[in-house]
Image (cartoon, rainbow, N blue to C red; front, side):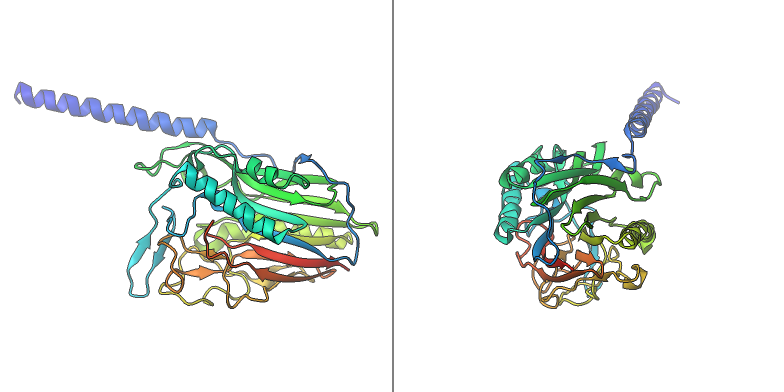
Length: 367
């Protein structure tokens, strides 16, 4: 073997070794910095209101997944996959928002949608505080500043170290959570941890899933248990979501047995009310869709079907840009209530202008 060939092999060997050290070091970094937030973590309620809820009086609540301010109608997300009806496979492109300006515009747009609804309670999901994907925009602060008269509680559910994938556009560091605004007094708030897929490397890319439980006093001596919920997506076969639903149902059943009122709102990442194939599109049902089985709910709990369900979905596929009648849509956002809560719901049509989700407005009274 000539000296030149030996030198080539030596250089290749050094490069392979260097790559192995870098990859190994990065994996070690992820492992050492990974953690989950403990279950039953108390959450501070800032600017807590003084108003006490009144039984029999109408109230409103809105839920809105704001998609970390990234999802303009033309935005696609790298983890979303789909299939056109002609068999063509589709996959999204991006892992960060288009620009800081775009994040601020989408955040302001989402705020304006909720401001127009003027709900007594607002449940937000995918609210970033300091993340690479949203250019460091503090959406929690932006939302709280827009509603200064409401109390707020924030439960972190994504707190990752720097994610170097996808390589051309790294997702980076993420700090995100669930935000719940209240126009009524909150006795206490607790973050409950959901089961997640703990496999490698899935756990580094999935959220630290949770639900936020608030207890609000009612003038008849009972409590309203108001829950902001965000279940797992990209869960093939729905195994993890089934475990999450089992935990949630245990919690809400105990609350109704104690005589309390229960409302759960948020992004269920399940097709609700038979909406998996309800809306016209040129795509097949994508693999991330699971159908919500109401039979798994405790006795007395129901999904509140929107009065315009057939016309307005709440979620679009992110594998292709949004085009009505072409892009797959379904309804995964909404509310579930106990039998002592009288409620109606309405899906708010924003044209997916500010997020890949639409808000849902609940009107309810405590019987």
